[in-house]
Amino acid sequence: MIGPADEYFCHQIVAPATQVASADRNWQDRFYFNFNDPAKELSGILAMGFFPNLNLFQGILNLAAGDKLICKNYFRPINNDRLRVWAGSLQVEVKEPMRRWNLKLNEPGLNVALDLAFAGRGEPFEFGVISWEREGVKVWDQCHYTQAGEFSGTLQVGDRSWHRLKGVRDRSWGIRNLAQLDFWIWISANFENFWLTAWLGETRAGQLITIDGAVCGDDGSRDEIKSLSYEIGFRPGMRTPASSSYLITTASGRKFRLSARALHTIYVSIHNGIYDLADPKVLSERDRTTQIFDQTQEFDLEGSAGIGMIEFFVMGGCPNYPQSWRGMR
Image (cartoon, rainbow, N blue to C red):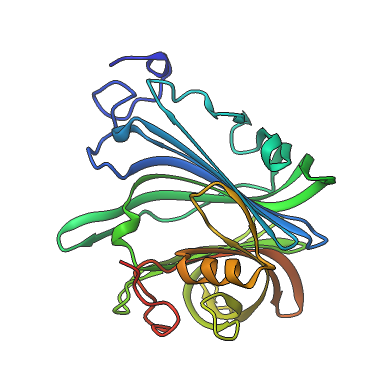
């Protein structure tokens, strides 16, 4: 079926823009923003994705503010409308490609509203295509790029408001079948004169799927990551990470250790509501059932202090920490 998008010069296959190259139900066209308050009081993620083969648009907002985890999910049928990025009160607009985005939503029932403008910090970093098969079926086949930046505007939670935030955005498209993937670590770190983006994916048997990323300088330099090993420390008796350390080698031959200490944990949820993480029963349930941990981190890289986020995807189990992160399918 043809539609408004077919008026634009953006076709990639011999078919209307509503049709993508693969019939896989997990083919998706999506983006993700994470943001952190420099005073380390609040963090959040905002993600959206079009699933053309399901005629579904999905959005998710998760905020960690104090001891509260605030979760809101958005759904609508695409119905040949991929040019406007919206669902419910959530609206996102590209103001200047590769530079500026606007994000808006208003959820009185959760006492949350935001009207933010994201401005990119230099050029995005383009990852190599991730392509991997399980038992002969392609379950991960995606393009990605990330970009650090700053948010201006207003984010209001209850009677508190924030006006300057730092974060990283991700753009991706292709097949990603989460139910068939095991483990990844995604690092997004902002420092004073550079930012770091890194992705490591493994199977629970220890097979490496991908290592990619770079140290990206404000001067436009890119020193690509060629190897990355990790050590993770956990909160006592929990699956939630407390700290982590990464030994990284780059294309220039540089070797360094990146250390991270977790400040806030977003137990990524597809259920709406407000979770009181000060309640031991609530915290225990979130810790026990979560498959994606997005955590605000304090970083140290050879004496340079940074802030950002690490995402731990653990659905299929982690080869190095099977006691903490066993497979959940």
